[in-house]
Amino acid sequence: MTTHIDTLWLFALASKTNLTSLNLFFFLAIFALANCLFRWAGPGGPAWSKFKPTIPGPRGYPFVGSMHLMSGLAHRKIAAAANSCSARRLMAFSMGETRVIVTCNPDVAKDVLNSSAFADRPIKESAYSLMFNRAIGFAPYGVYWRTLRRIAATHLFCPKQIKVSEGQRAVISSQMVEMFREKNGKTIRDVLKRASLSNMMWSVFGRKYRVDSNEVESVELRKLVDEGYEILGVQNWADHLPWLADFDPQGVRSRCAKLVPKVNRLVRRIIEEHRAQPSQLDSDFTDVLLSLSGSDKLSEPDMIAVLWEMIFRGTDTVAVLIEWILARLVLHVDVQQKVQDELDRVVGRSRAVTEADVTSLVYLPAVVKEVLRLHPPGPLLSWARLAISDTVIDGHNIPAGTTAMVNMWAISRDPQIWDEPLEFRPERFLNEKDGLRDMSVMGSDLRLAPFGSGRRSCPGKSLGLATVSFWVASLVHEFELGRCDGYDVDLSEVLKLSCEMANPLCVNLRSRRRPIIAVQDREV
Image (cartoon, rainbow, N blue to C red; front, top):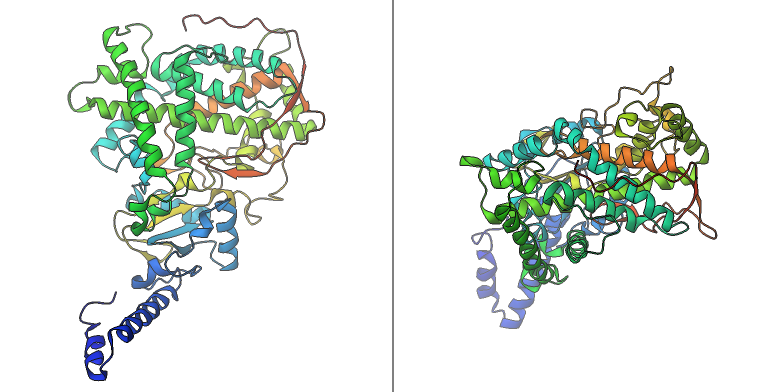
């Protein structure tokens, strides 16, 4: 970086040549431009200029670097840039003043995600403003983050608690089937989002609202979650160009300022109700947080942040993934038939599917894995890590403060890893004896790790996968899924907080068995 000593020659030159003020201004402007171009000319762009990186990557543009790569379908743009730079193992680029590395290679991805040097997440202004810096997803690595992770793992995401909550998922599943019947020939995204939110409200707040509920509190929370998704999905220029921060060009700060007080009021009211009437038998996650003591006890602002994040993050991925699965089953009728044949063998048609039945299935889990491979809900953005110390990745020096990303979308479509990667073929996850191949999606195998890996992997991945598998099994057992008249299944993507179908799925339903009697909202 140029120092004040390095620039003294300019003023000496000015005094020798009797430059006028105007000439001096132009001279300084030319020098600044030349300096900018010099910084921009190196590999990786302007943010990497003083580090002389050995990592290949695009220069981008002066000042802004390669911020254009993060707009639209960023995972596709970055994969294309990595291919053009011959940098699939590791690529460097600049997002304004932010240094970034990205890998499209599973071995390098494992090094990044399991490295203690990448134990933090880069904190976006929107995430900070929405209080997520005090919740599991974005809290700095340290004692507080480990405490939150342990509390969630013990009281919400452990196998015992997942088993205990089977009944509530069965209630919601039956209500979802009812709504599907009513929405025959219509888009289903709203039903899936309602079901996911109802499930999380039950677990986190103890609120047992029906999926079709229009209760004031339920409607209010849906609006808050939707607004939060919109804000977090914005690629905020001010995160990478600090000189823009005071201008708030995309209105992120002002939108957060309007949303957060509403969240605080709603969640604080629920906490106060739990304090006034603590539950001894049917406790939820709010009761758990209120019962903590000693070093585990959380302040009220921290409780609000943690509860808000649980609702927020637990709603989106489940709905997005189920929609992708159903879209593929509508497109691939032969695959849908195989799933239904398996369900008929294991369950029959005289009763509804249970979660215990799902554990006996082989082909449906292969379908879920194949959809996760082709349509990972978080193809890129949810993988970001922040280097808390200097480190070495794939033989390259990486300075502290560098943001690291893993392009799981590119890895899961790599022809060097997958045979015919663009083909939808669940059988790739089955062995010769029709058993499920031992290929976990929980983070141990970076060829397919849609929920992350290492310290910052998704804590709710087991619960989320159990919910998705059970609800898909229930829907496919109840209905034959077909295309709506005049509507074709469009697999185009839009990347928001998750990678969603750009056009909501519309399905035509035909009952495969007699309508089930809805499970009542009983104590479970």
